Image (cartoon, rainbow, N blue to C red; front, top):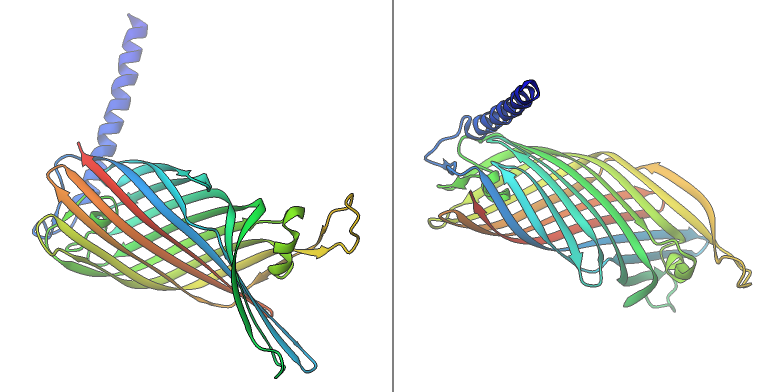
Length: 348
């Protein structure tokens, strides 16, 4: 009887804590909103099946300046479009999701989000590897007899490219009374009338791209003898978001935000090519690892979402694009990441 009483007490304690947490989230969701513009559904939970198409592109542009010779080499690595499928579960904008890739690209996506009437915080972690990539070679030599060149080829990598990326982003909406970002992000609220808001935000982005394998020596040479690149960026910016309600149940949610890279750290693993063709010796020889910090750079982020709500059901189509740039001595780089997400869900 004594053990049963302790168990009952512990159960009640946990139950009360969960109820208190739920009440706090409910309060944060409705705090300060105008109910003529934003509707909070009675049913707090959402479950969604999601499909995703995603691609990451890396541009590396290098310059060489010597006596009577200026040379530009522009290489573009495209990871190819990966497709993933998974599910997302949330309570009034606080949710977790997981997606696994299908097709030729192997990997997985994990995402976590929280949102209230004036703020949104999102975390997306992506891990994948791919063996297919598109490469563009573009260059010029300052010689009147040598024409510029611009070629694009599709390569099948002998050893896959490993990509890891993490994006943590947070936004604050000044017009949380009339504008709901969660209406477009996770459908935990419903926008009833069109409204917009000035927003400020910050993001921490890391990307690690590794293709340094002996069997990929030719590819490493094409990428200016760089076999691995890691980018860390802290971006701070301001922009504008708008919710357009063209008809009952429909929503178009759009945002555009330029930002400055307050922290822009670049780490590169450089390699030499072994002139000895003895098969017992590696072709790629590690040379050094260089770390540099770029000056302030302007980056861009934006998304466009289409939502349809019908009773407890909802469907969504979302596209998001991010661009991050860096500069290191005579080498410039640009890393862009886009994805298109479709989902269908239900409130309960």
